[in-house]
Image: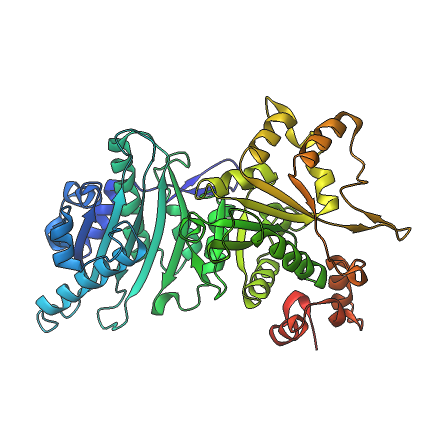
Length: 478
């Protein structure tokens, strides 16, 4: 449906939740089960209330008791039930039951599905707002042997359990509707998940598509859409290139983070990483086996000059960093204190930020904090209140001299504040850096690649130039 606006502009009208559920119910070939744990049976309720549900719903269940749930879906060794593994067990188990119990001879045209969620709503003390995993495993064709699957992780923002349950029901209805009627437009499917839901009600921070109808979907690009659409503030990729839940990777870890453009990653980037990592793991309270290194790129850094995000450029950087065995975070945190606040959601352990000394100059610039009522003091309180150290890589000046934390020039109003943090050991110079590579800059390498100039390979860590050439990254042409 479309609504005509002024001139030739048009927008799509949003079907009501009842219309979405009814359209599914009236499709005589869509048939499946609902298994909802932790927040009532809010999704299936939408389908019951829409009418015509007897032709769609094979079964609806809620195995709330852990013993019953384990008896159906198997034991969880770590006794954690709101997990992706649990969701996938639920989806697979329910699909198998449908196939075992319904004969294809009797139901030749049925497209089977299993919708499931495992959720923890807000606790009684209202300290934890709650989160959950939601997914659907389904067929688009009755003869399809391999099922499609969409799974996503959500975080509730509302502070009332009943409201969270209602929001979950809306999300589930949008997901099932989109899975069947927007599967060939995954970017639109993603946006439609928020039909009748406000962004301040729910956050989707991880999503994965798999199966025959999504074989050409790159889940990293889908994660980028989450950021572009304002559905979350950060997404994460593991070294194998797959989407991962940040909470699972960062939980109770010592975190060392590097922010940069990495366009491409250079010898300077890797020298900063190696030297600061060595210093970090030798700190008190830091355990090497519990340390997580994160290479972070801000969303603003991904935007092209016209304001749009260059998706190919994003993919080039993500591929390169992941191929080097790094965990990559793409965030919407322009200011460093917001990045630290985000890490603090998952860990209270010691953290480190590694950066070039020139980045520290920006941190001490008051103009970035005018939107805060407490200005730069509020920002620094959030940045340095926690157990954090900043590791500083020196800068080579045009006159061949070096700038370190000892001779950094900040605004006169910031001088005493700077001295306070340096004196208290919050600002630490990186030692044993390689002085021979300080004249290497990513922008120089990128320009040389685009102009097909010789010599850029020597500015990159071993093996990186080969990856760029093999995968034709950053516009490289043979």
